[in-house]
Length: 429
Image (cartoon, helix red, strand yellow):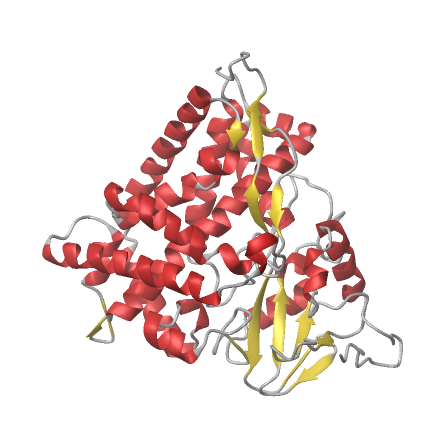
């Protein structure tokens, strides 16, 4: 392993404070990982890490806010292709399932993103915003009727899933099956396995993805015959540069929207409830004037929890950044979880402060062409749900610690017990 820093003026030498290429690092408590990121930010240059198993390429960790932001805004230098995840998607997987938009660069990415953006018409988004409020009220009503339980099953995971399905136009009859496909497709992002789950089965997630795409292909065929006012209908009639979107392109985008759109928002919602429960003074402030403080609270929840921990980039042209010169072919990892705790940008970065201003967090990416396409939708969903959870007579709060899934990719919550501020013995309001 080579974790020696290449430094200027010889000021910083020695081993990195932790090995980010070691799966064991990602099993550490989150507080220890954040402390390691803080020590890495103090070094003069990004550290190079080499996986011990030989299963991945060496990479440099970009941990400072300025470096992550700069790399995000130079896609011609720090390319998303061939893939932003670890491991990178295999060529055969791209051929079968289509290439995700997050792994594209240049004109290919711009053309597809522009086409997809056009599908989200102002009329469709206005209807979606109204629907988001209705979904949030319905879920809060159901939570009140059913009583305390697992927040993820009651609302955390259901909120983004229901909104995405409504927006896309997925029939209710298909949703339970698609939800199970999403769970299985994202199940193997962790780094720790227990019992039979220690036997990693890479094909299981891919099979779930394939079945989900078959489900979506069936809906797409229906919309081609009988279009409706939804995203699927808009996309099956769309084209890029005069060429209709292929089934693989549609499938890859549907998978991205369903898996990424649901997973990131559900985790932010869950972490938000934990933070507001653990910081009663912040919750009280938010409840005192929800409309005044809600936008700041959502941004601070995203900054503090950082649902996506990291994305990978491949160096496409020689570039100097953060005290190091990178050459083509090298890999860098953009650690959003570290950048969002950079004390040179955020005062008292480990504190949770819904009045933090400015709050230039990188929770939706560091800007540039890959800034999260669904950021606005995610904010609306979180705002609507927290309005219902916090402003009713019997507000919802976390009833214990969340069960986190160890991962080097996303800050995932597996389950979270919840209760009400004021409950009858049977759990009803």
